[in-house]
Image (cartoon, rainbow, N blue to C red; front, side, top):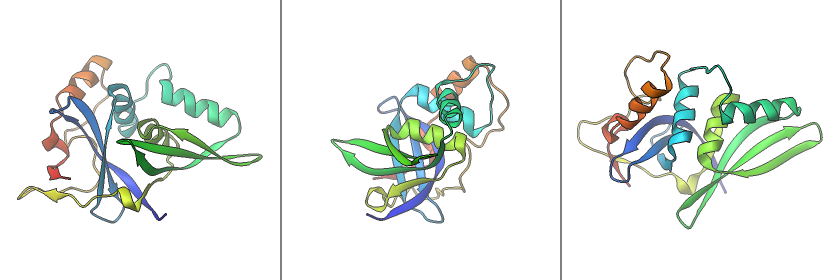
Length: 174
């Protein structure tokens, strides 16, 4: 199985399903992998993408602290397969005793990868070539929107995430 490195390109709200979508794009390429995720994970990803720090650790911050305090390090995240319309991810950890692989949801894995600045890899079979609407382009990996970001209150962040539109991350057909 061939893996290709991807980066978080966009995060948006799919108004059709009212679910959040993180768009991963092949590094130095055009192929994409959209993954529908929960609101809590979307908020965690946006918070880390924009270096917004909270007074108390969020769940993914806590997981990073636990992994680090146990003497381990997240080397990479792999998204190797989809089973019954559900993507699966694996955390590749390095410990004093060697490497271990932990099964995880892609959304949690992406949130952790951003915190560790670890690369994310996707099975080449899962990537799709997006057909963009006319006059639409995909800018280089940018934050969830092109608006200027400032530290937000939890209420402002929730309102921001609820108002993202599919156009905020580019139109495409799978």
